[in-house]
Every structure is written in C-alpha cells, then in structure tokens.
Image (cartoon, rainbow, N blue to C red; front, side, top):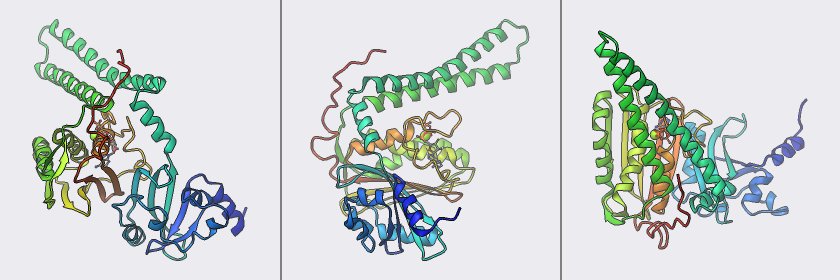
Length: 369
Ligand SMILES: Nc1ncnc2c1ncn2[C@@H]1O[C@H](COP(=O)(O)OP(=O)(O)OP(=O)(O)O)[C@@H](O)[C@H]1O
Ligand SMILES: [Mg+2]
C-alpha cells in the first residue's frame, strides 16, 4: 500500500509523540500535531510553526543546549542528543531526543518530544510517599535486587561447608568461592546504600567549593580500577567559580558516572573529564570511547533498575541524576554507537533555588520493613 502525502501526514499526526524536522540552523521544517500541542499551538497556529526556531518555540527547554549547534551536529556528524524530564514553559515535562534522519531530501534532524509529565508526577508522588502502592512495588523491586545476591551467598556458603567436611579440599577453589561471597556482600552493601540514599536523601550540606576537587576525589577512588585496566584519563578541569554543593553527595553522583565508564571501557580505553564555567552554570562532561549506548536504551539509563549489566542494579545513574537535580541542576547523555558516551552535568553555581533540596526532606510516613 502506497501512502500519499496527506495520508502520511494523518499518520504522523496520529502519533502521540511530538515530531519535528529541523534544518541545520535549528528551524522547524515540519511538525506533527502532537508537537504543535506541546508547543502550545492549536488550530491555524499549528501550521504557522514551520519556519520558526525550535529554541524559540520552547523557551527554557534545555537552556544549556545550543540547539542550532545540536541540529547541525546531528545532521553533519550523526550525533544524537537526548535529554530527559525537561520542564517546559507549559508546565509539562518532556523527554527530548534530537537525532539524524536521512529522508533523502534536504538535510534535516528529527526531534521527538515525549510527554512524560505523568511519569514525573508519579515519581514525585513516590518521593513524598503519597503513593503507598507505588512504594510497595518499589520495595518489591528492591527485595528482588537483594534476594539475588542473598541466594548466591547462601549457595556459596553451602559449598564452603561441604568442602570443609571433605578431606583434601582444593584450597584454590575454596578461595574462589569465598571471593564470590565477598563480592556479593559488597554488592548488597552498595544496593542498600544507594537505595537508602535514593529513597530518603539526607538534607544537603551546602558549601561553596571547587567542583574540580570533587571530580579528582571521585577519580582517586577509582584509581586502582583505572590502573588495572590501563585507562587513559584526560582531565581538563577549567571551572574556576565555586559551586554551592554538598560535596559528598556530588562526589557520589560523579563517581557513579565515572564508575560506569570504567566498567564499560576495554583495556587501554580513554575517559575524559572536563569542567567549565558557562553562563550561570558549571558544566561537567565525562566522555568515554567505549561501546556507546544501544540505540534505544539511552531513554532508559536514568530509570530506576534499568541495567544491561550482569550484576548491575540500575541505581547508579538514577541516583546521580537525583543528586544533580537536588542541586538545581540537570544531567544529559549523548552517545554515538561504537564511538562512546558522554554524560553531562549542569550545575547552577548558587546551588538549588531556595526551598529546594537544602531543607530537610520531610518523610511523613515511617516505612516499616
Ligand atoms: N558510559 C557508559 N557507556 C555505555 N553504557 C552505559 C554507560 N553508562 C551507563 N550505561 C548504561 O546505563 C545502564 C544503567 O547505568 P546505572 O549506573 O544506572 O546502572 P548499572 O551500572 O547497570 O548498575 P549499578 O550502577 O547500580 O551497578 C548500564 O547498565 C549501561 O547499560
Ligand atoms: Mg552504574
């Protein structure tokens, strides 16, 4: 079946994602109905979108992104940008993706916007423990995360006991079994710690400080793993303005991002850490030359329990993202398959706006077990 232009248009208009094509200077060349709705345009106004700047249509959307550059990068270098949970001026939140697309006509990039307001609302509800059923599900997932290592520990201890009762047990294999138990215990410890921090973050202890020191401290913790793999680390830490932050928590966020890179990189891989002062934000960029994200996974990397790793818990990035958001900032990820992955953090120098993050987090219902 061949579709004509008007049928194609109807098909695209039926899509609930906002879709638009941008040319290399970030001007909208086509927009579907959902895109117009997200931009607050209805009726005849919707058609008038064509020819307008994408950035102008969504003022404040990913302020730190130069959309003209991003569109041109997508078109000429195949680079994809993905931002999650961006607040728009219309009071909704969107996941935004800008990617290359080959239509065989003029060079354009595809922007897709997904309304995730409901998801954001549910998550916020969860945070305030308003949604006890959601919390129960959440608890179930955590129980699942804990049960796996527990089972493994149980089995391995059983093996150890059997070996102890056997004459001439092989010491080497006993040692390996004990090593597995130890690793699983460490993993449990990390799951519990990350989970507690995620679900009940302590009040931030905000002090002005150098973000570069925090990046270096996070790198130091990973030093042994970096050496073992012979990774090349490049640091261009050029941020000079102090950032108001909770140092320990920020270090945790950065560590989680760096740890992923260290884990994913092959021997001799490279990792670069950059900091710079942009207009009102300090910008951090961590780029690795690892395998990159699978094309459809980048939307999920900040979701709780999303993992592609054997033994991963999928808490690392959600926690990092949470910490950055507590500081009034935002994270973004960009990836080119086979080329590597870049995680960026944008942190306002002044820390979170008043009334956010810095105050105690009220937890009205004390959860039992
Ligand atoms: N630098 C990276 N390169 C490629 N994929 C990455 C990178 N960082 C994260 N990912 C992907 O994102 C997923 C989620 O990362 P996250 O840190 O949240 O969880 P995890 O590393 O799998 O588990 P955990 O951190 O809890 O041990 C990873 O499983 C991996 O698929
Ligand atoms: Mg991780």
